[in-house]
Image (cartoon, rainbow over all chains, first blue to last red):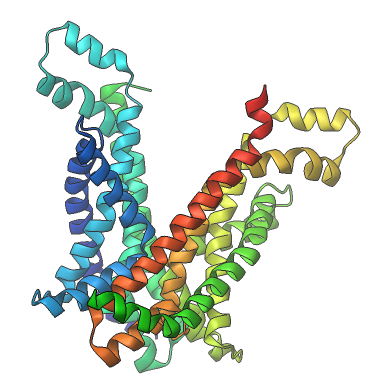
Length: 215
Length: 220
């Protein structure tokens, strides 16, 4: 039985990874802009960025997805299920990534910036070559953890009809009446993917730790 | 203005859903937090099988998406001859999920209490459970409170998942109204506002609580 269920459910793995990866990528980019905005000298920009981050975090992910997938077409913006899921999760990821970047930046001692300034490096060079590599190293474990969290959240995309792991598991459960087995298979797939991501992240972390050599 | 009148008209229909959401969240936290503490204590037990049981339940509760856990319960319990209402099923799934996450926070909290405290308790004649309850636990709880409050918010948001197994909570009520009126955007905006404002109110409360719990530290 499991031999029939496994391939039926595993074909959703591609879309699960696609939705997770794309959302993490877009969320990561928007998060960079956000963290810049949060640290901006202009008060209004700071206020808007903080409001955005808080607003995203207090609304449940499923409500975001429904707002985007069911709500937006009312005003003629019709999205495919996958587009809606990626947009929704990117919005959510951006707020969390901004917070992760912020804590990464906070962990870099002021001395680093001052040293760069004393060496006559420009502001752009300082951010690009001194601050960001170190901050990224510090933030990487948190990013990996969040990525795994997002992977699990992406199961929600099945509620708007994205054909990912949970979607196929639900279908198998209904067609074969093997509910328990179907979702054990789905659960195992999520855990396997999480483990792989965690192992890769740890390797990258160790390599960077050796290369950059900060605590 | 138009949307606001719509919203006022829908509130009576959404209110029972919100009550179910709060009930689901409250019960999951009520059962989940003690369960998490139990898992945390079991993980530190000397008897190895207790550690394995704790590991098994914590890793499944944390490793599976809450949605998959919910479906797992919903589809498998009836096969085992257990028929429960969808609300009870959702409470069980969310309790498991909450317990698994909470156990990590409790574990971190327990580990953060300095060893000297345990030794001091021992020298004061507070052994075993008494020392744990009077000396270690209160300090661990204060350390675990902020992450547990964050978890409570996530559980409240997670309660919206119960929608998929037809628990009549806020999201399902919203979906019901939306399918009748076709005012999807307006309905989901209203649910978002409700979820958001309750979360914000709760977070404000937590801040007050944290300040109270940390009072003895600020004084000296």
